[in-house]
Image (cartoon, rainbow, N blue to C red):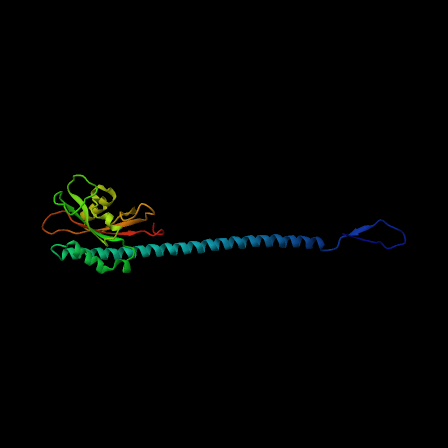
Length: 232
């Protein structure tokens, strides 16, 4: 507020006159400031919402890609196991060398790096196992032992001779695959090929194969693949 002199020769009480518009300017300034802050807050909230939506969209796309990739690998591995089953169906007897040559021809490390190994599991009677060290030890009938496994590297050697009948998770899926006559996959588990340190979870696929006219229990062909962290 400014003091304005009053005309005349004598001193008079000073009067104050408000400068028109100044309180309005203050109010308008505050109004602009408040609205400006409000708009900034709304803009920030809009940006957060937009970023969250983009992040959610990217996550959903990534999940779709991972699921699609995993499903594709499972389809490919199912075809591989069916091919191995065809090998046994076309031959009166498949020995270890023939099995090894077949799996080596697949070139797993080059074309299917996710597959750690392909095994042949047979339900066998409790006699005549001089060539196999069945694990865990102990009498039972029948055994369901891994009798072939390739590639026969240091990892897969630990699976040779393993009797699945004493491991409920694997055996339940293998038995169901045999009963239903179709390929089945386990849930996440620790593969026998994994070492105690930094053991990576994986899955097993079981493809049943039947001996015609004998009525014998079906052998099982299996493939193991470790899971990526994203998959797990």
